[in-house]
Length: 626
Image (cartoon, rainbow, N blue to C red; front, side, top):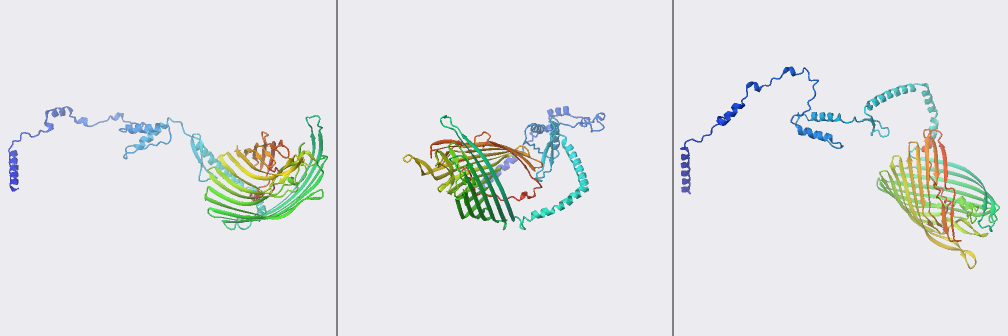
């Protein structure tokens, strides 16, 4: 190893000595000393006067105010082209973003190009923001022609100054002080109204007393003719007189025990006295003197609580019912009972826009006065309609499940129900005992029946001037009753039990149009499908109504018009096999025009005292046919 290192050192020393001993023949020459460079420098040499620019002072203006701005932006051709391209786009939603070091003139260039482009565009309209009295935090934007905003502002300030002067003048006038004194005199009326409300907020006591007197006198002439000349025509006349007195007293008390608990108590007294006198020269009918006295005394109590998402209500109504019907001095019907009608409901609201409700109730539908009087309601050559004084009340136990959904512009509601109906009141048809060629239409109580169905409705506001309320419902009821069937062996009629499943579909559509603040229009459509019943098979029914309402005199006066059954399609068609095979149709004056005028006197101070909605619990006269 030592020998190797010595050899390498000796070789390195020899090389160094050899290199130092060579002569310096390859030394570089300066570039400026080359001939080509020297020639170029001589040709491009500048003189001293060429290094200084001396302006022509005669061409420089005394002031720069009249000079036009320099539109050229030195060294920014691409930036200018981009800005001009962005400004030229005829669409909204685009922005121009300029970036660069300070002092380049970005703001000056963009602003100047925008000003040049604006001169080629039409002048935009003015926008003015005015105060919104309903929503103070949302001012109303008004679009005005160009140049009118300043004029509008000036006129508004002038109008305000004028109003201030007028107000100062009015408040210092004698008529103002006279009205102040008049208001003080009316303070007594306000105090009297305040007595209705109790000391606790929301606690109310409402007393309502009504007495009505109804009187009707009807003279009717009947003429029956036949196409067959061998059948003689027949005619008769009759007179029907009716007097009715109805006295009702209602007392309602509401006490919100706290913000989550509410208690309601109430009592009602309803006394009805009816007299009917019937005189006829029809041999198949008889003269009659009929009185119907009804006394109902009831009381109710409901207790409810509402928590964060769940609420419930329990209630009961206690009723004493007494009826006494006299026909020609003899008792035709008499009933006296005491009944309790319980009710319960519970609601669950998982969110503010969804609510579920389940309810249980028991209710009564008492027979109407026209359903009980044994006096001719109407008469045809084949059918005479009379009431049945022996009708019992109809009782219904029901369970309902409902769901309500709040949407952006309205509410959607759907529900299911199951009902057990006892002594259902319905129409019947049987042969006239005095004349087998004619029939008597009356009312009777059917056997216990069960019904179920569903309902769907929508309340939707399409826009500010149009809202609609479509609704459909379906019900199916298992009915049991007695029908008259001809016995061919004895040539007489037997009462035979009959059971059917009656299914009905109903559809309604209500549409309201607001033409102006004071003028509104209404369009209503109704459809009911055909229904198979114990006594009859009813045909479908439908109609369309239209109306309008106009308010004036500061909304104190209202003029209303309504055209019912525009196309005259509301008919009650039917067919049946008992007691005879028959097809018929009942028509009435369903097509009618109503014209009404309403005026509210006074200041309407008592308008806020809304009366409690009540159900008179009376069965509809149609009895399932009309």
